[in-house]
Image: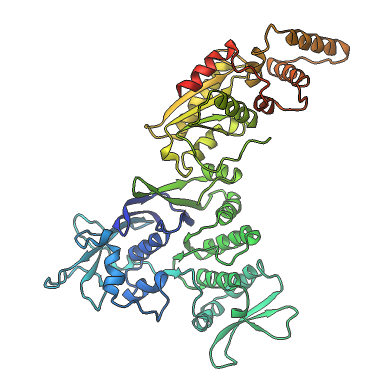
Length: 333
Length: 197
């Protein structure tokens, strides 16, 4: 579990501090305030083994999308105001491991890459290096096992064929299918089963729905249904301890959100997964608070990004302040 | 006429009161005083002041707030009321740049509430005698319980409200309708407080 996070000189963030992460962590704030960038920062910090292509495209562009000269259109923008002398730095405290730091450095073309660079992110450029250390001051590297695989779910739908293939992980794990199907019944109680089938050339997920003459491809069902299916499948079967979800409320009706949060929490606790998600939805935050208030540990932390004097700041909500804000229908986004 | 829900910090100064009556009362009075840079918000009961401050601290645009004025009824313990407000403030950990003022109603070191402030404006007027006679008569007729100072003030203010030009208004609404004498000398202390924010 990531306990806290500090982001310095990364994109538009000067120095952001997030303290007191819980099992479920929500990032709110106005459009363009940098919520998704916070998810990217966590990805960079924890999952430094993921490929440059994966990092670039996970939230910003789907796989197979072209961004032209990625150095110009993506990588240089990780530096504040494209100042390549700045060293974007992301650090955090990992439960049971200690402080953990990732730093980006842009290397001049005639400069030799440093041996301690963990990964050349923009491999085709050979200019951007990621340093992963336990302490920025002495440069001491962490043991290899401190890498944490992260699942990232973008706001846009995933490739349905890939989803169907990935569903095999759920099927293999004892009890996981039931968990996923139980959760999806919170959206559509007519659901009987989910199956990965290939009757027409490519694997697709099909849902058995009461009253329908045959199984229906999940892509024909609502976006919320597919999205929740993706999220639940990742939680119960991916075996990755951290899941990042952009715009978690997408496609989900507010009336089902409390039940969905209860189900997600149960699944996260069972699989020991920590969620970091962005949302624009007041109802989503309120539902999470309602669902998690029942828990003694109150496993929810909400962070709103807000511009203050031209820089971004973090407003952290605890249970008491969120309780009052939700009761009074105050803005928390 | 319900008070408007608090959706945005609109002014650099904020007066907070226990409930919607206080909001309407202070809004009317500030309007009468032609003070336009002050917003009024309720914290929904004295027990909610602590969570209110915790949430207010995180409200969008809070950093633009310059002055926070907290009002609270003394009830029967003016010293305890002020201590309670100070304890809530200490817990909230508000930023040091924010100016914070406290006013315990009806006035310093006196027991009572907002109703007592309003009753003072009709003191020694003929209507006061009528109200006292009515309550005495009612008590002698068949009511058999002890009033504390809070209840008595509420009864008196309701009796007064019932004989206004619009007889079914609540106290805050009556303030908005212009039935209170904002120029009464007994309001000097609170007037100075509002003007000094």
